[in-house]
Length: 150
Ligand SMILES: Cc1cc2nc3c(=O)[nH]c(=O)nc-3n(C[C@H](O)[C@H](O)[C@H](O)COP(=O)(O)O)c2cc1C
Image (cartoon, rainbow, N blue to C red):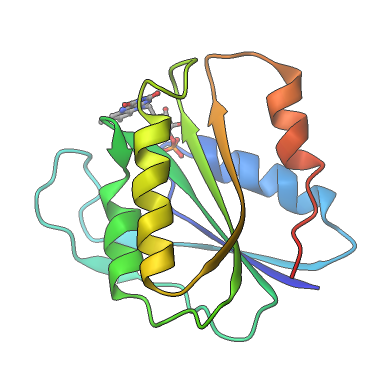
């Protein structure tokens, strides 16, 4: 299966997690592509994307990014808003956050993430919120052992 993982990661925690997961999925044709903006400073008010990965010809799309002040990282939000319609494409959403509880940002950000992908007719199969402060092997294993479905 062809899996494209589209990542926005500022300090690379999300990217490292996704790279680890992609290694586990070595039976599949997996590609990681990063979203970038000209100015990625977290408090910037103007976002102009400089790298917008294409969503064409894949069996499964993974979108992965981080929580920012209880919301979805604005650069991921800007990417999703400008993306073409997904026409029922199967998707998995991954969020990383620092705090140990989903209520401290992740849950709200995931709601926003989900709404933006559904607004583009993405078919969300699974969602994961990974807390970096919660040093549980289980939450990481749940992601690394997960095999996306078409
Ligand atoms: C400006 C800013 C706001 C953040 N807000 C939250 C938050 O509301 N909740 C949380 O748990 N972590 C928060 N974090 C932590 C990041 O979500 C966390 O470190 C994430 O793993 C960073 O991902 P990255 O390294 O891929 O950019 C925030 C980080 C920054 C820089």
